[in-house]
Length: 497
Image (cartoon, rainbow, N blue to C red; front, side, top):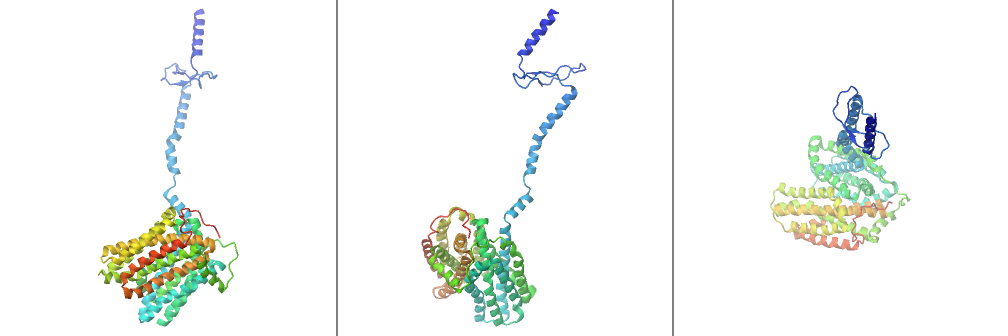
């Protein structure tokens, strides 16, 4: 008994000295059979007051195994859950559409408008030739499509500030669409001239209103998208519209094509609430409807140095672009002895580069600032004009067209962002009307005056003259516009009206 008592005491002292977190092998099971040794934690940590527990039974060990497997399962399933948590491509596409809903709908509306105008221009020319119009009438019909634009742009800007853009857009679209549908009723060149002139007075209601909304929404979608309006409109007007016009007139005749043009105007009316519903009206009361308002808008060009500089740049850019579009084909055929297809390709290359710049280089303009963009354009555009004026082969002429499209696209983006900021300061309808006047005026100047002077100096020599004039005009516009001289890399929205 003494030996057993002493042995028990010694075992007790040994157990007292053993760390609480020691691991001991499993002993015999309840049935007396040996089981595989398994580490059993007998305490939480050294110094713990928790007494050692009895070895678990077979059922307990089975439960511990199940618990361990259950603890490991979340770790194994974590990558699967993470993969499931990542948005699927459909979710990403839906998120992109929701984020850019206005911009996508606006691009669709602008494209439909451009296509309808492009189809109408080509169809009107073909219809005038079908009616036997002489050269004088053809020239008058072509010019009549710009008369209303030049006369009504500023008054429409006044009306936009007073009534809002949505009403004017709907009214102009419905009246112009109805006139297009009724146009083939009297097959006469004089009747065609009268109707095309009447339609031109309602067209500013559409694009001045749309420009007003887009200038305001640039504060939301970002100035990097400033070129989208012009790019989507140009794709429809200069690429898709002319391509569709010839096929439509062959398949549907002139009456059917004009009816389709009128219906496309109705489609834009149905699409317009999705775009114009985002427009926030001015908190201040609109301007009074007086003739002095038109004089005030014109006088704004003399008072506001920044606006005057931007309008000079817009006038110069549209003049150069218009001259290139009208005369590069005859220059290529007569001077470089190109085929008609190669000469037409020069126009296509320049147009594609121009549209590419409008779509993709808006972010670059926002990062480097307007000052650097104007400086880059001051190099690119005159260099392209010099190359076009001195080249007599296809490759340098094509390179000149590509550089010209790139330079004009960059310049257009910078100008549109500046016009939007000026509109937020002095009134968007007012600035949109002036912009709608200056751009077509520059285009008319480039095509008419350029052609008249080119008849004396030679058409290709006009590129050399335009290079000098454009560089001087752009440099003067940068000096007279004090705000342009300050680099603008901020993407903060302009002040609301």
